[in-house]
Amino acid sequence: MPNTIDRIAAALQDHSPRRIPGRRWVRRCGVVLLLADSDPNASRDEPVVLMMKRAERHGDPWSGHVSFPGGRVARDDASTRAAALRELHEETGFDPAGRVEPIGRLSDLLTREHARPLPMVVSPYVYHTPRALALKPGIEAAELHWVPLSWLTDPLRRQTLTWKVAGLRIPAPCIDLGGARLWGLSLMMTRELLRVARLGEQRT
Image (cartoon, rainbow, N blue to C red; front, top):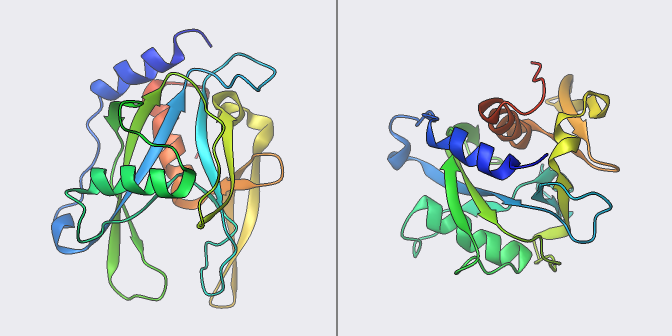
C-alpha cells in the first residue's frame, strides 16, 4: 500500500472529528493510534499500527482485551493529548519525544469507567513514526503487536464475539488478529480511521 500513511494524514487534515460537548466536566481518557511505515520484522513491507493486549487483572472488565495505548488524564497532565502520550510511554516503553509526528485526531467516544456511574470521554489521537521498533510491555500490557493495516481491512478477519453484560449475551463485531480480537471502542476508532482514509470496504 504505497503512500498509505501520507494518504491517511491528508484525509485526517480534512476530517472534522466529533467533540462531545461538556467533555471538560467529566473524566477524560487519551488514546494513541501510532502508525509506522513498516515493521522490519514482518514478511511484507506495509504500514502497521501499534496495539496492546491488556494484562489480566482482577476486577478489570477489559483485562486481556486488545486496545490502543492510552489511559485517564492525571492531575499533572497538561492535556488529554499529553496524557495519551504519557500512557504510550508507560505502557509500551516507547518514548515519543522527537520520534512521533501528530497527523490527526478522531472523534470523542463516550463510555463508562468500570463500576463508576459517571461517563468518561475517550479522545483518540493519531501519530506517525517512521519505523516500528521492538518494544517491551509495561505493567498494564501483556503483549504489544504492530498490526498490519491490511489485517484491519480484510473481510475474512471479521467475526462476531459474545459479550456478557448483566447476565445477557450480546453479539458484537470484532476483527481477528490471530489469537486476539479487536472490538468495542477500539474497533470504533479503527473503523473511523479506515473510513476517513477510505481504506478498504467498511461495513456496519
